[in-house]
Length: 198
Image 1 (tube, rainbow, N blue to C red):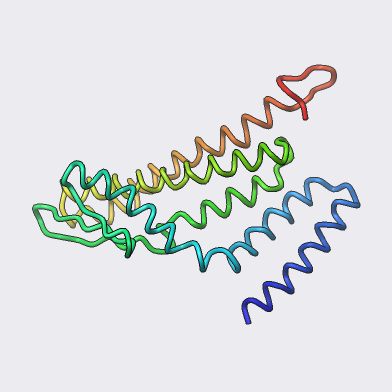
Image 2: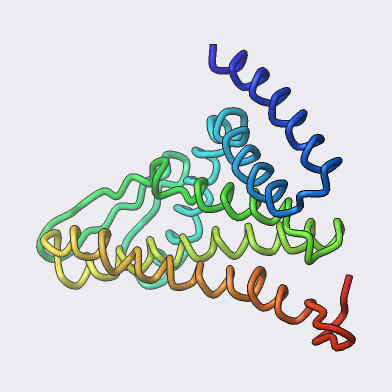
């Protein structure tokens, strides 16, 4: 049922996208295109990429844990096991923690961001995806380190506040460089440009 609804949405999305392009409405095309692509990725990509991403994040975070001896990762299951002095806890890297939502949102926005050429968008998309995966692994690592030193009672604070602040701080840096800075550098004001104007 979801696949059929997804195919119907895809057809409607493509038609409206085509109409917006013909009408020369770039802002609406960006909004409709980005939101629609995100929904399509939720339907068709998310079910297949969530667990592999969780495994990659667990493996990267687990490498740090193995080197320091603070925690270990069972990356096949997307689990990080922290054995602190106060007790042991298993961190399951699930849908929310895998980074799939953030990657899909980033790629959806980038796909319709016209400041870059098509090839630049592909390169920036790949680099940004790797960056988000690493940022998420850093977040899981920070959570594991806090639990290792502070015990299980620090889990809520580490996961809900510190981990998210670290991850979203790194994400804001990515969005600033990829979207805001690129838009400012490439804009043209009258006869003056800040950089290469596409």
